Image 1: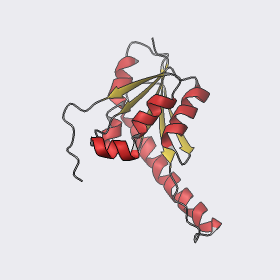
Image 2: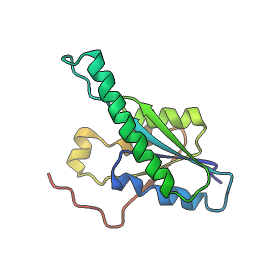
Image 3: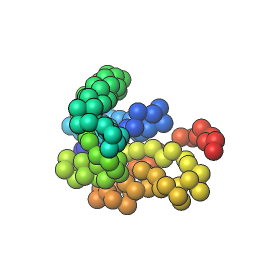
Length: 149
């Protein structure tokens, strides 16, 4: 049913829990593809020079590439593509990449934030649900980690 599944990761173990779900959905198809996405969020400051910003960006990009290579090595599915995207809004980047790549499904986790925190800040999962033009599978941890204020 699904041919391209996008799995956005933020570097946390929690976000990686969507990977087994994506692999399971494509288990019957050797033609399906998993796109693993990491959105870089480079902090900017008016006191930074452009050289400092570029250096910070390159340092983070190298660390993210190592992380993504490790993720790819763990996956059993034969067709995995790693994507690194720049953008201030992860949800918008996820939605844009899904549209650009012709993704059938976005598989991501829900971090289970408190209702007040979600009301004030929103969540990337909730924003992605609103922005995406394809289906979104929200994978929940059966034993969520309690969040302390």
